[in-house]
Amino acid sequence: MLASTLMLIALLCAGVFIPVPYSEMSPGPTVNTLGDHDGEPVLQISGRKTYATSGNLNMTTVRVTSADYKMNLVEAVYGWLAHDNKVVPHETLYPDGKTEEESTQENAEEFSQSQESAKVAALEALDIPVQSWVIVSTVVKDSPAEGKLHAGDVIKAVDGKAVKEPADVAELVTEHKPGEDVEFTIVPAKEQAAAEKEQRSATKTQKVTITTATSDDAGEKRAIVGISAGTDHTFPFTIDIKLADVGGPSAGLMFALGIYDKLTPGALTGGAFVAGTGTIDEDGKVGPIGGIEMKTVGARDKGAEYFLTPAENCASAAKDTPDGLTLVKVGTIDDALGALKDIRAGDTADLPKCSAS
Image (tube, rainbow, N blue to C red; front, side, top):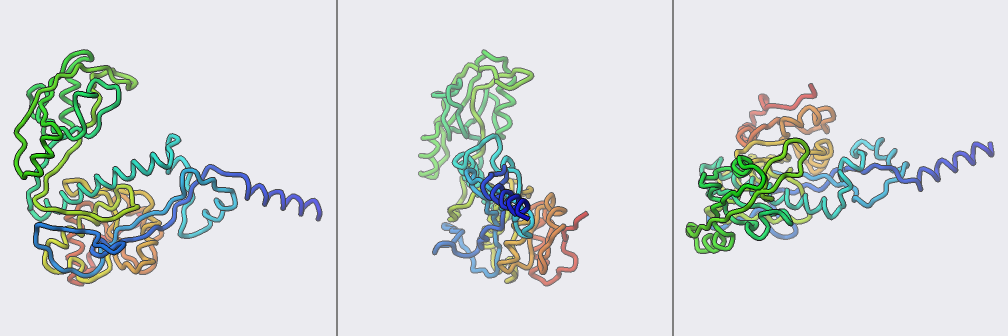
């Protein structure tokens, strides 16, 4: 008996004091994109007529343990047994030894990009034109482009060939061999910012010649200049998304739907409580996200009746659907708008529901 007791005490101590390489995910807050957060509207639109609406279009989140938190064995076992939580390897949330600060910065950048994509997708769905152009997103330190190109510069052409998509830049640069010169035609970031402020088209271009370097990638060597290209936009009116302490790209779909709702008469949900998740690109395609099981639980706990679910997450989400929640499968913003039309009309029998198979 004494030996068994001592062994039990030793095991309990080990479970409490010995860290294990795991982290925990749990349901996080949900926020109605049509409502207020911390005393101000989540979506603020000026320069365009908006309409009163009702109901809920809630974006959902996942709460995770910090990168520095050392989970012990007892907590890991409890998390595995808890229905609403999920214990995952630490590297799943913080790969390659990424610090919490690095992860937070990356999530903030993804969140910002998701807002831009949501605005474009919503306005495109409303047939409201949006001006877009290719820009320099980042310049790698100590690269050939450092000091010659700057973040925010608009890339009009490479070697005299017009650039229409970010991918065009890499394609045109890699037509060169390392060590060869490549010519960029740009509108400097300051000129572009001034033109936007004055609501005019930027016309002052300049040519920049850069000698390419060799990539550090394994395998075939290719020419690089040390930039990443992205897309920027000018919107015909102002759309601000006021939501702090949230990161990642997964709120894109719900932001797009909230913007669409505020710019159209009537309530998009018909007053129903709809939540959801999903990334969205500028063409309105909805992409998968992580932590779907936690998000459905968080949504249902808040009172959601319907959950707009990315098609690629449907099978996983349907394996353990909270009681009273209908999972609606969506692959594009048009799918979501169609589902909301049916919900609004009370015609829910034929909604494209998720299944576990």
